[in-house]
Amino acid sequence: MTHRIAVYVRDGLLAMELGIVHRLFGQAQSDSGDPLYDVFTCTDVPGPVRTDSDVRILVERGLDAVADADTVIVPASDADYTSNGAVSTLFDTLSTQRLASICTGSFVLAAAGVLDGKRATTHWKSASRFAELYPQVLLDPNVLYTEDGNVLTAAGEASGIDLCLYMIRQDFGAAVANRVARGTVVPPHRSGGQAQYIDTPVPQTHGTSTADAQEWALSNLGAPLSVEDLARRQSMSVRTFSRRFMAEVGVSPARWIVAQRVQRARELLENTDLTIERIAHDTGFGTATSLRNQLAAELGVSPSAYRATFRVGG
Image (cartoon, rainbow, N blue to C red; front, side):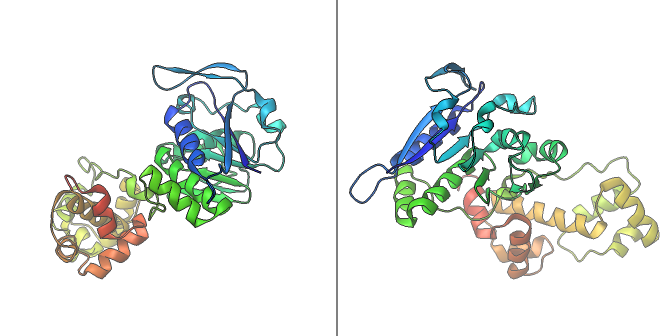
């Protein structure tokens, strides 16, 4: 028997996410060519559903169609960005089904209480609001997807691909998932998490009592830097400087220096052909090994993997 997947859509559906689910699961076949999944779309009230583009889709099935579904997937809606996500009566009929969300579809699962006490993720741009609305959820904003019991969540649109491939791999094995990945021209597994995609610009430093020290440090990231050096540059004691820095920037001076070095390394990996060793030297990490360890800790990927993903014109 095929595995039945119900895709629950709402007004403002992100059409790409609906296409991801149908395309990936729809390609999964047995060695003899038989389909392994039956994927269908449902909504609260059958009829036209607005998408985030200039087209509408006609959804013919209502919530009664999910009663015998093995998996229910909730894609995002553009309404998620302006509201908390309405709780659907869909969840009144679910019991043991596997549940999954893509991007801000996690808001719907959280609003229904499905994620209480569970590890979950959502798009990094919405992570702060999610954490504020649903403190009972164990939010991890740095991963591509999560699995906790029978509930899975994906961070964003593209990570919905990662999640679908993971579920196929769990259901029918790596060989099937790899065939689907090749057919879709995507890697069967992506390294790292969504931390590598988060834009972390250098904060504005003007107008603060530690601004001179910050600007000096940014001009000398390749040199050894200590809190004592920054405090001396600002003509303050280490204790006073550290206290003011924490109040103004929100992190310790040492942590801030590491963050700026990582940011500079990211820029050099994206925009130059400098070797990993040279970038490590120019950003103050000293050795390629130190840079690799730091990027793995901060972004979940190696310098070479980051460059392969983000190199401008590469």
